[in-house]
Length: 309
Image (cartoon, rainbow, N blue to C red; front, side, top):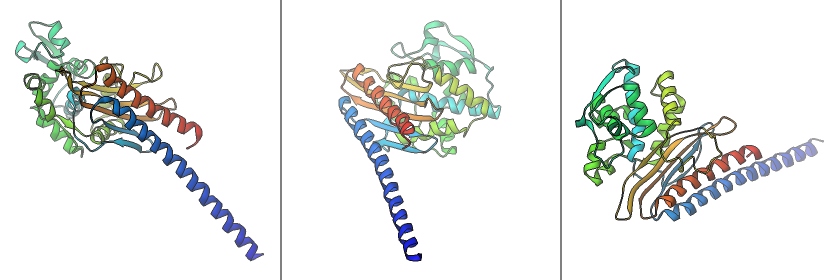
């Protein structure tokens, strides 16, 4: 009996091992297929594409050029907003604090600034108003005003280092980027670094509960470039995100970006970061790269949950 029992147990253990391996293989194969899908989509961008996708609840991730440095453009307004809200948490700034914005603060006419367009002679706005303009409307003038309140770009990088984030760098202003096209490359992030920062926001690291909630509200209310991460996702999907874009000069676009947190139907959270730099493809093609990568990631994680993998 002892021999037969040992034989049966051995068979069951062996069978279990085979099943576990097969399950693991199926999961790995699906992730490998998603990686290949990303590479295929990226091929249409006519340039190197950076991707970081992570399901926060399980930490499963897929990367493409995840440790390469890419110009953020206006995606950098997300960490700037975090740094401002951290000052609010410290009580060195207040949300209702009024700030005078003069014509000297205005970014150039070729740069995006609803604040400048609505207040040609300057205005007085609260820190909260400026934050909403920066995050939800990607206002360049409001961004530089907040950077001034913080003490300059380096103060944001210092805040990021305190959070333990070494792969996101804030080094220049909107005005400087408007004067010199190469200046945008000073504000860089790796896809992995930006994904880490979005994870920190979702987990509540570096901000109070109220500040985190306000920033997520502003990110979810973003009105810029809805055809990127949100482009192919089911209508009404909650997406807290920040886009970034450069001008196209002589058919060449330095940055077409989107980075955010997508809430899946079951309440889990999917970080998606896609940077499309130095591309000669037209805008619909560049934005389709971001939309297709986002939808592929959505399909993978939603279907994986449903099939039990």
